[in-house]
Length: 48
Image (cartoon, rainbow, N blue to C red; front, side, top):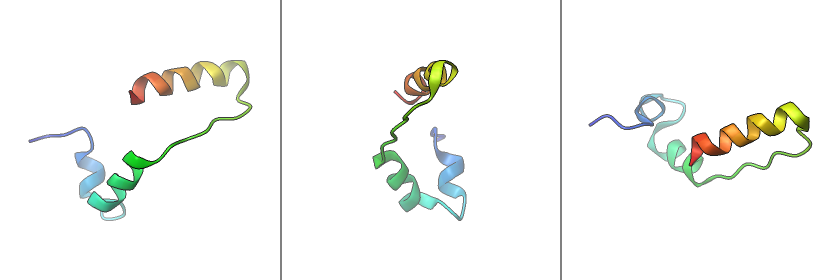
């Protein structure tokens, strides 16, 4: 079965353990300005 993160899981530098860490992590964006705020909103929508 294909899943969204299959390429990261098969990549030796990430694997299942690394993918779990990525899924459990959070990001803070500070001081991104007008264009950055649009990008941050798009990123938020993409990740949900």
